[in-house]
Image (cartoon, rainbow, N blue to C red):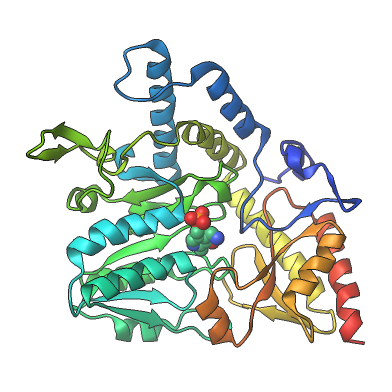
Amino acid sequence: MRLDIGKIRGLFPVLHQEVHGKPLVYFDNAATTQKPQSVLDALTKYYEKDNSNIHRGAHALADRATRYFEESREAIQQFINARESAEVIFTKGTTEGINLVASTFGRKNVGKGDEIIISTLEHHSNIVPWQMLCEEKGATLKIIPINDAGEIIFEEFEKLLSSKTKLVSIVHASNALGTINPVQNVIDAAHAVGAKVLLDGAQSASHLEIDVQKLNCDFFVFSAHKLYGPTGLGCLYGKREVFENMPPYQGGGEMIKEVTFEKTTYNVIPFKFEAGTPNIADVIAFKAAIEFINDLGKDAIRSYEDELLAYANEQLTQIKGFIPVGTANEKVSVLSFNIKSMHPYDVGMMLDANGIAVRTGHHCTQPLMKRLGIEGTVRASFAVYNSKAEIDKLVEGVSRIARIKNK
Ligand code: PMP
């Protein structure tokens, strides 16, 4: 299906504004995506009509809010093809999802001498929780190396695997370079040595078809705000049998079955991991974001974004002084680059002056930047509402900036 980009853009109020006197060109989608009107409306409607605490309420509003909340969980279950909605836990985001797994699964299953494997491509949120766990437990963190294109070296990964490996936690698509990892092969190889696998889906969930049953991953984490949904909300998928063998994360209301001063018994999943009043409004509104994506179809989104990426690449690579960073064969629509003899931050500021929003710096991947021997990059990341006309503006801007130092 050919997408009607003009119509899609019309659904996003924030896109229709000027920045520094120029029409906004928003290319910072890997950091967070904009929200369609349907998500904004769902938030307003909830607060205007349905606001109530969920579960256990004995009145109409509580029933309604509970129903909408659980319908969102079901929409997410279908979105990632989980077996049942109880395998979807709401969190604050990808970061909290990973920390939850480290604090519960990790604390229980990782001991002295054990190993956890991550890759050079990881975001800090998929590095630091494992470092903290390894330090606490006397375990070792092993790192899969990458080649210069920004792809993991699979043979090196295989060499790291052993019976000591308890978990492989790897990014599905890199936020800094866009590389899509060969996660199916990673999962199969990890399972062959008895390790569990966590996929950081922060960047993949909005671009790629996700089928957690087919992938057979043990955990999958992502953030709503990178999928046209609200901030401060994420999802952690886990297999029922894995979740059931994990201790709870936080203690409090909702996560208990029965409390006495002597002993507390815990609720069933997913509630065991959802202590306290959750982010009800945002969970409910997230369903509208999922519907927005489903209405367009992931295949159509992916092929359009691929087209944008190829179009941008084709033109930018012709600019003197343009240095692409991350040239993997399989990529989501993230374009990282530098301009010879210029600091990425300066490039970002100059683009901003033209109304073009990009991100600059290390993108929370300092070890990756170190491996590539750079301080940071300029990153343009495309979403389904971006257009070729906007890419033309980026190309024009980059070309003008590059000429300053690359005559
Ligand atoms: N992992 C990746 C690959 C990401 O891109 C991000 C967000 N930049 C995160 C983890 C962390 O997500 P959040 O800040 O929403 O918790």
